[in-house]
Length: 160
Image (cartoon, rainbow, N blue to C red; front, side):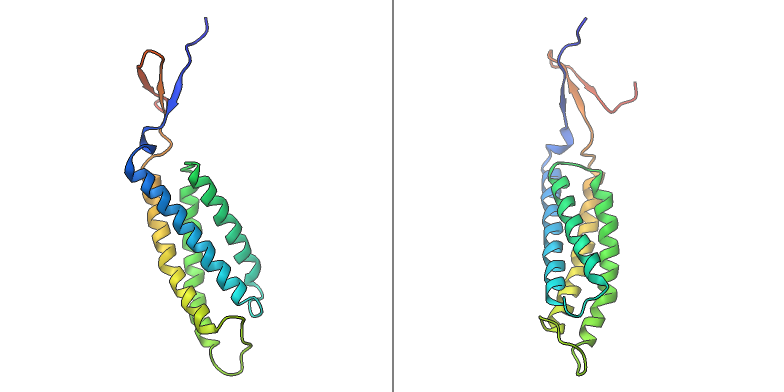
């Protein structure tokens, strides 16, 4: 006997809080991509070891932004972890940009002071990204409810 057609619904994705959290996480990821890209391009001549890592961060953050728009809540803890690491790198690297603003250093394409300020701005952006990614993860976007043709529901994630 064939089973009736079931429809999966995700009720936690329909709340205004979940929708706004998703938009904020994607926006913070894109802001981070922009900041890292400007810092990378602006300091390309003086960044030797960090260029590859920054390019990887740009690509991974763009991929994470795509997956978060697709409601993949499993990407949120990864986003928070990567944001913590990038925030640490930014906190360590910001003073070095300001120190380059003296005589005797190779001048980057953008001024070292501007690159230092963008790096400092990156720190609170990463802190906000951590907070909102973890908030999104706690909203349980993954919860599924099966709806039967007769209108009855069953939690698809519940243990049988």
